[in-house]
Image (cartoon, rainbow, N blue to C red):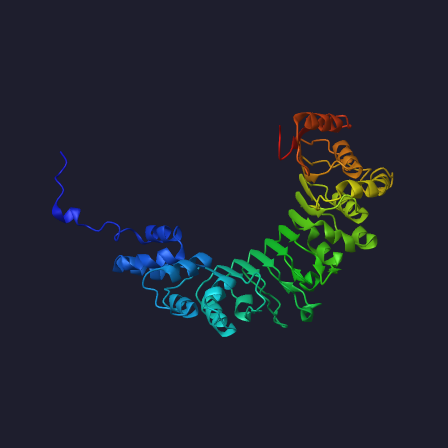
Length: 426
């Protein structure tokens, strides 16, 4: 028989006496502003807050903090400083949106950032995210972060940094680097830095990438995306930099414009991408001979490729008919030269382990159709082809007609399933 509940049991504060790890998991599910407010519940929750090591200072934090009751107009720079200095280490995650901070508190100076970064580097930070996107004010990452032995994930947006000239190793424990709109200084050109544990490198809208010479023996995923133009000119990108990592990586994601600077003699010396399993190309122009030649050369160097994904160039649809008429003859000529030439770099070999092909923004141009014909004829174990149309599909008859046209192409794999996707089906 159950014992009757006593008054002492009814008044017991069960929430405050939860295990420390449970409290921390609860705080992880809350925005930083709300996590801080739990300190008012009891001394137990105040201790949990001071030990909470995942801090996110984004727009929601600054805006809702300012709108909350009891806000004393204390500068946000001082608020962040106080929160950090009150921490009981470690502080494992720190995320800061600088434009959101400056929108409400324009007094941010480099010295404040340096103070925060030095504190984090000494107190076990493992994940660091600093965004300065859309901000014209330059901010610098101090060397203490470049050499920090605890950081595993680093994400920077529009933040510049200098590399130590005599340091053989940088970011010693980092496994994931994500750089957005980062310019790599010319003064590091020629120096090769070791990043011994790096597994994932993501570069988007970065400038002077060729200056970022690194040795990353554990690198598995390499992404180079975004605009490759600088001040209206095509960014100089040395294909030799790319070749340094081709042998090791398993996943490669790149923008098609990088093919524009590839020289045949250099590409011929590329090592075989023996580990490459997934290749993703963005903003790819089938009408460009250099784009088309580049992907063929990559396919030749990738004997173990399992998945190929290509996203076409998303052009403005105005004057489509005029442009299509103008380019059609050139498209057919380029396709015939690269896809039918017996000495073409891929026509004499099969893609022996390719199982999945995804083509997005497909326009059904002569070049694209010949490219698909080549892939279907050279992929003996192909299982699935997914094509997403560039234009809206108005009726099912259009899909059926297109599907039949593809099915008429010779297929090396009898199991290959072709799927056509569109935005609107009637």
